[in-house]
Image: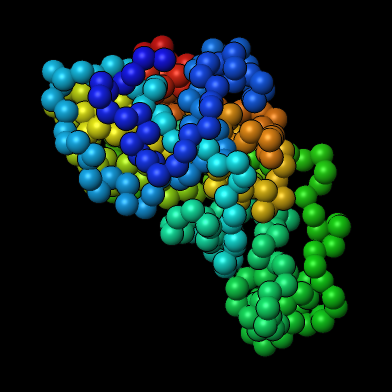
Length: 355
Ligand SMILES: Nc1nc2c(ncn2[C@@H]2O[C@H](COP(=O)(O)OP(=O)(O)OP(=O)(O)O)[C@@H](O)[C@H]2O)c(=O)[nH]1
C-alpha cells in the first residue's frame, strides 16, 4: 500500500506499541475473516481495525502531531493511514452498572456502562429486552450484598419499592434466581447489533452533515420491533479523532475538502477507530453470533476478531431514510457528500439513490 503522508510515521496515533507483522491485502485477510459478500472481499481492510485493537486514546484529537497540512502538501488516499496496533487478546471489559431506562416512545432499554483496561472512557451497551445479560455484571463480587447487587443493576425482573433480594424474578418472591433457561435468548435467534461511534454533532446538536442520529434512531426502532438487540456505543467521537479535531475538519470541509481529506490535512488517519472493545462487550453479553447493522465493511471484519470471538452471520444495511424516498430523515447537500465520500473513498456498501 502506498504511504499516505510522506515522512509521517504511519502509526503515529499509537506510537507506544510494537506492531506484529500484519496482513496487507484482502487476500491475506481472507484467512482471518469470512467476507459476507463479494464486495466485502474486494475491500482492502486495514489490519489495524481487526479486533482486538486499542480504541484511540482519550486524548486523541487534542493535538496534531506535526501541524496542519496545506492542501498542496503530499496527500494521497486515506486507506493506509488506518494504522493501529493489535493486541493478542481482547481487551478486558467489566460492566460496572446497568439501569432501566423507560423511553419517551413507550419502550424500554437497559443501559450498561463498561470500564476496560485500555482507556478511561465510559463505553456503553444499550440493551433491548431482558434476555441479554452481562456476565461481568451478574458475577458475584467481593463484599456483594443483595443491596449492592440491586444498586449496580445485577437483579432480575424489576426493582420495586421494598424489594430486598436481587435475584427474585417476580415481585415479592424470594426464590433463587439467576435468569432461568426459559429467560434466555432462544438459541435460534440471532440478535441485531449496531456498533455505533459517538457523534455529538449528529446525535445532540441536530447536524445535517451526517446521518449518525438517524442511524441510532433506526437501530433502536428495529431492535424495539424485534424485542431484542444491542447498540454498542463507543466513545470514539469523530471517527476517533475527538470532537475538537472533528470541528476543525468541518471547517476544512467548508473550505472544499471531503471528510477523508479533511482528516488527512489535520494529520489524522481517515478513520482512527477500532472495535476490540465492541467485540469484548458483545462477548460479555453472551452474543457469539450477531446480525450487524452497518454499511461499513471494515466494521464487519473488525468486530469478528482474529479468533472469531464473535461471528457476523448477516450484515444488515443502513440506508438513509432520504435515500429510500422516505420522509423524516436527514437531507441536504452535506449529507449527500458525506455519504458519497463513504462510498467512494471508504468502501461503504451503500447503493447510491437514483435522484
Ligand atoms: N472526522 C470526522 N468524523 C465524522 C464526520 N462525520 C461524522 N463523523 C464521525 O463518524 C462516526 C460515525 O460512525 P458510525 O455511525 O459508527 O458509522 P460508520 O462506521 O461510518 O458506518 P455505518 O456503520 O455504516 O454507519 C462518528 O464517530 C462520528 O462522530 C466528519 O465529517 N469527520
